[in-house]
Amino acid sequence: MIPAAIPVALIAFQAAVTANKPIAAATPYQIATLVAQGQAVLAMIDSALIAAGTSLDAPDPSGHPLALIADLSGRVTAVSDQETLSDLRGFVGRAVFNLAQAVA
Image (cartoon, rainbow, N blue to C red):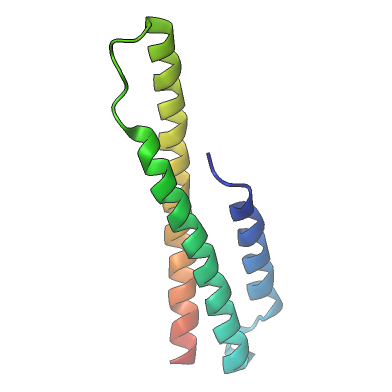
């Protein structure tokens, strides 16, 4: 499950970047603030990915078949969430990298 705080943080980060357009006109302090905000979002995503990784451990095949099916269904959802989080990690990471390069 994707924590509810991540979409909120992403929207806030996107709004902050949009508010500072054009980035070329932003002060180094503004860009550093954006980088820090983006890094905080990355930390949230990383934590969610680590937490989600434990939900993919091997199921117990000795259980009831219906329970096994329900467990596998939950794992499909977990994999989908991990894929989404991984994509978000890449997008935000690239944005933070580009912002950091604007200061360097």
